[in-house]
Amino acid sequence: MSLLANFSKLKSECGTDEAGRGCLAGPVTASAVILPDNFANIILNDSKQLSEKKREHLKSIIERDAISFSVSHVFQDEIDSINILNASILAMHKSINDLNPQPNFIIVDGNRFKPYLSIPHQTIVKGDSKFLSIAAASVLAKTYRDAYMAKIHEEYPMYNWIKNKGYPTKEHRLAIKKYGITKYHRKSFRLLPEQLKLEL
Image (cartoon, rainbow, N blue to C red):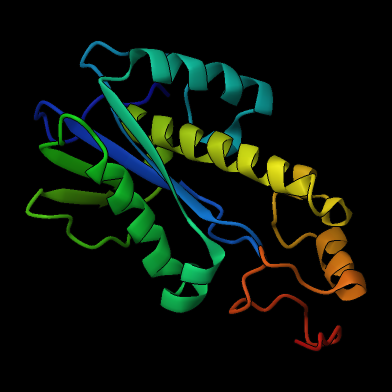
């Protein structure tokens, strides 16, 4: 099924999505994208359905062809302070704020959002597999976050963030049990299951 170009039928509609919400370490990363009306791409889809190679290929196309795009990180300390839902919405708001021109309508992946200024919005469950601009935002959020996790992997290679990207894999949790936590871990998250207690 091909993705739809527009929800509102207004010019300058943006799609927004985030990546990294369920991770134990690193930022939650959001993107907002305004695509031209004539944008089309048969590969573009929810970033989770795409290989890393396809995401990187699409990233350059989106950045070249978008009317405007932005990517924003909200880091682990703020996630711990305001909780992951608020941090995800904040990252989306920051990305929308950096768009030029500002959108006339916002479509959001998922079912939770807070109004941004007075711009009307619509939440769409599985929006990243329905609308091109949300799919584009999901690709940018994922690729930029993955690049950040690859960078901090060099500082703490024992957690293998270059592969698991901070998600709660068995390998990641065993590394936390063995080495403890880093400044990049989200202390408000349950970093280990109950049977693997961690002294914080």
